[in-house]
Amino acid sequence: MWRTVRGIGSRVIRGLRAGERSGPKERPHNLFEAAAAYVSACAEDDQDRMEEAAGWVSPEALSFGVNELACRAVAALARERDESPGAVARALLGLPAA
Image (cartoon, rainbow, N blue to C red):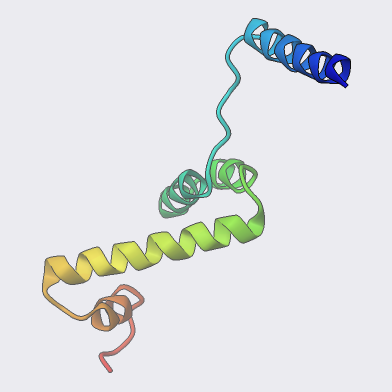
């Protein structure tokens, strides 16, 4: 039994050491980074950057990130303008006041 435990431990340590030798790995993008890059590329009408950012995460994650960014942006603008989030959202979309 102890031989098995020692064998597992030495394999784990060898794997960790091999990972150290391979150098630093590029950190993957998270969904909020992807959403920020995607939305800013949309605002600048940069199709290449939009496609690049869309490839960083799954479509579902990107959709969630864009939704979260929109919610936070509307809330921040509403506080800044001292208006309701609904009024700000309608104004940003060019809709008449409700």
